[in-house]
Length: 608
Image (cartoon, rainbow, N blue to C red):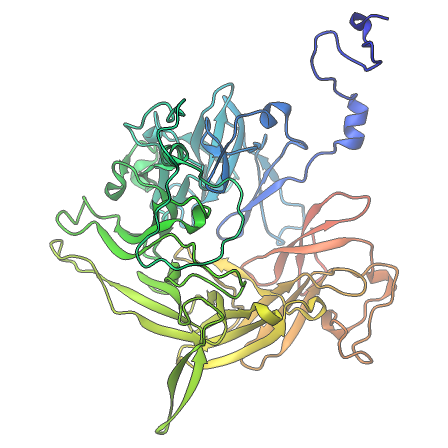
């Protein structure tokens, strides 16, 4: 038989047109089931947005060009992460247990020329004059390498969602290479968008056919000898440097989202970004006026982008409007290439790190600094601590957390400045994370020691008193207390959910002899007592450890062992707690049932 008749000389099936063969519709249903929808929650957790996803990436997607620079991989044409697939539908559902019927799911039609959407972001403070809820998303234009921005508004009580284009960005190319290209300011009045500069070259730098010289790496003044790790996709030469700068250089546009601009045709360039810069991170202050910007300044051939040299500065969004002559950039710190971090996992940068805005104040910075130079081989710093009553003691510390306020003035001719740093807390181990309650009365700080896999959580009260919440090894999964649950506050920042003063929620994976059974606990930080309020159902087979005979047994809801009727072979996990502190959204799946989502009450058996 000839190859034209469907079989080659080697006996391998082929097609007459040379294309890929696809299985039948029946086989697709059996072996390529639909993918679980992607979920996005509104800032107040009252609306859920579903987006359908393709079950598998297409051949076209996998064959697209890909750039690999400084540890990141991206599509050089779309200026987006490589292998990025797009969602093909959009649905909205109101979350509430008050109705006895299942909440209605509303279809939101996609733009007519849309091939798919991505990057849904909700406005933390939507303009109530014309939108009860508001989110933005990007849409890929059909048959074009173009990503467009759209705004979607909930306009009335009848669940009517209306999609608007953003004419203010017409002719601009959004840049998603280093994360989402847009974010709302904390007050919700503006949308900040990373775009390609206006006079940017249309084509990337061409690779020279003949090397222009050797690859030279300079050692900075004051550099120290240090071991290095092995990383993928590092910069290799001057051509890679030029391409990195070409693809990541952006300007920042500020789109007006207020009630005076429902057409979204008003936008202005953030004056500090004019001409282009290479952003690493951008954070809006709680008051919405300032931006904390980390911009990349120094490149390296030995470490990826997250360790490049950076300038950290505060930008005033009123610069060029109300503050005509004031400084438009307030420098905070300039960091060199961070290629001297010890190999030990207890090591860290010797420079100031983990900058953020303090969520409880309008414009105060928060950061950590290693007192031991970031090297665990160095001795910790001994600090004399005043304990009152004319008594003092000395303690050894490795890390410290500082706050630093921004001094602003109503006088437009006066320069912005920084206050002197103030120590918030010192830690004996390495600083990991910090959380706040919205009232500002409680701060939770995490520290760790990698050498023996130990972690601590501290509670810092408003009077600066320090109390140990727990100290444990993170390898003990059976007794893991979980992590605090957060919610978005009125100023757009995330806080620990506090159902009552001094009380928080903890959620965890719930490892047990019967497998993982996720749980939700309510914890009193003053008394350290915990109450289990929800847990995944126990499987039908297997013995549940009895806490009365086994003190290490994980607790059950209400301290009661579930009956046989209350057990089921399903896996449930907590998604979110609604603002009534009683309704929770959970996911549920089994060996025979795909993932579904349910609303349930913590105090009653009502669920939907």
